[in-house]
Length: 146
Image (tube, rainbow, N blue to C red):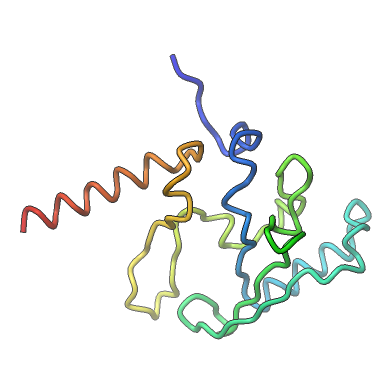
């Protein structure tokens, strides 16, 4: 019987590759995360750090119309909120993007479909790798049937 895979027990293997580029949050979400960090003594090493750095206008994904990217520890990543074991230090307050990963949901006002993020497509260590492969195979099969 194979071991049940979860993101938590795969972290030593995948090293949080889905967080290597940081994540996007809405402006209001960023404000709440900053407040949580500021009021949490266990995160005092982040109290004087810039937590977010890139802005992007995208009304389909962000209620305020503006997304903000989390800062990376280095230019190669990972997200500033990951600890040395690749666990999220703000897990309770993690962004919606992280909560729902690997699914990506545009706002209901958008006509864009729900999509499965493919950033881990080439990483067989990711627990979502086989889900993505099955999804892509299904899409290809539907195309061939038409």
